[in-house]
Amino acid sequence: MSSVINAINAKYKKHHVVDVKSGDTVKVHQKIREGNKERVQVFEGLVIRTDRTSSHTSSITVRRIASGVGVEKTYLLHSPLVVKVEVTKRSKVRRNYLTYMRARTGKSARLANVAFDKQAVNAVPEAPKTEAKAEEAEAPAEEA
Image (cartoon, rainbow, N blue to C red):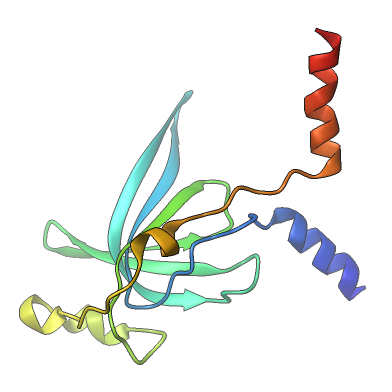
C-alpha cells in the first residue's frame, strides 16, 4: 500500500526544487491567471517557515512588509503554479519557525548574512527524459 502512495506522490513531485531554508530571502515566481490571460508575479520576502522539506507537499511561508503591513504567503514548492524560487540572500538562524520576526521592525529585524554560492543554490538541473517522453518526441519527427 505504501509503495502505491509513494508512486503517486512521486508522479506529482517536480524533478528538482531549490534548497530553501528558514532565514533565506527569496523571490517566488508564481503563475497568476486573470480571465484568459496568464502572467508571472514575483513575491520577494523572508522565509519564516519551511514544512515537510522532503515530501511532495513541502511548503514555505514567505513574509514581507507591503505598504507598512506584514504580508505572509505560503507556497507549495512542488505546485505547478510556482514557476521558480530564487534564493537572493541567506541568513544565520537557529530555528525553523521564525515567529519572532513578526514583532520586529527596523534594525531589530535584521539577520546576520551568511556567505553562499548563489549560482550553485539556484541552479536547477533539467529533468531527465523518460523513455515514454523520448519516444513521443521522436514519433512526430518521423511522420513529418
